[in-house]
Length: 155
Image 1: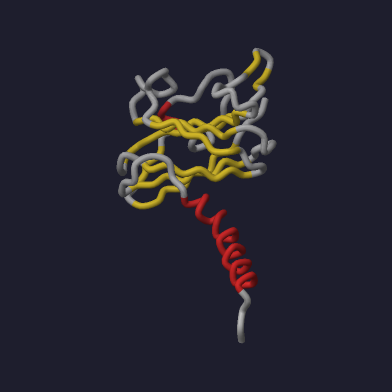
Image 2: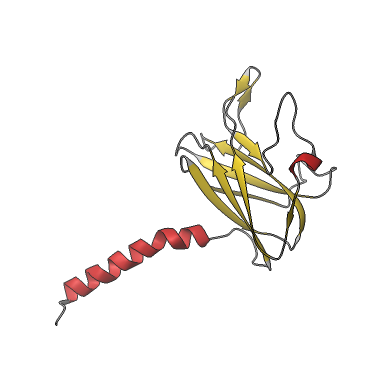
């Protein structure tokens, strides 16, 4: 059987395009290490904007504080689920905060009577009138892959 150059080129291009989503899913932010965190963000309302995740150390003085993050990374939002990945400094205790930056302005927009952009935390704590404590959201990451499912809340 003989393949024409055009048919061969088309088959190769189709194969490369089919592999592209898998490669994008394996892309992790940061410097490779022996510990990787995959964050599956659920309940995303739209494909608009960016999903922003922040990784915090197991230190209450740094949690949700300006300059306290180990890593902040962003991926295009995908409804209803956005997958994100980051290399951790190593195994240990961490916390993650996520928000849907729907207008891509690099900040979490919210209003007094309700939130405009969705947000969530590792361990999916119930949130009433204030941010959760570090103890409510910290998790253990081992060597290898750790996967978290974070459900967004839009109020």
